[in-house]
Length: 179
Figure 1 (cartoon, rainbow, N blue to C red):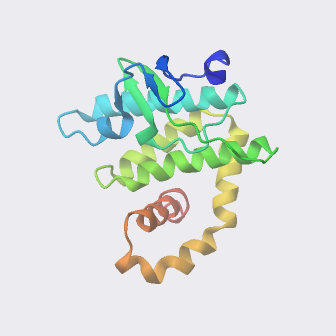
Figure 2: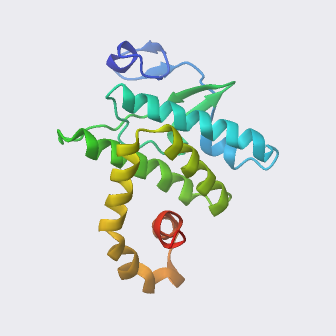
């Protein structure tokens, strides 16, 4: 409830007790929207752009999610809501926790087979245009610093599953294909 007091876009608690709580309905997750084959590309971009702006706004309020995966972000008629905040970092480095949020967000896009690299590149370009320049630069510097991980893991690509594939895609979209 502290997050709501800080104007974070979180669902209202409809009912709670010592054993459970009930949240208001806040719509489908961004993941469900983006993987829905009945939604056109323009609508998908509108939804993900709203999610980008909501995450950027969250960071502007000096709040972090901790793991803003698209399965933990909902969208309903233009309203974005964050679920399952996991910000338990002991880090006092605000730059690091914002970078971590951004990486989790983009990694969650890379996890989805139904989302193309081109779509993610457009989302990244939109995010870069609208976020604080230092946040984007810090994220790219972090990826560059750890690009050796990509090459270390490359021999495992033929047998990789979802988590590892998303890491490959993240590095390829943000660093490798840009060369």
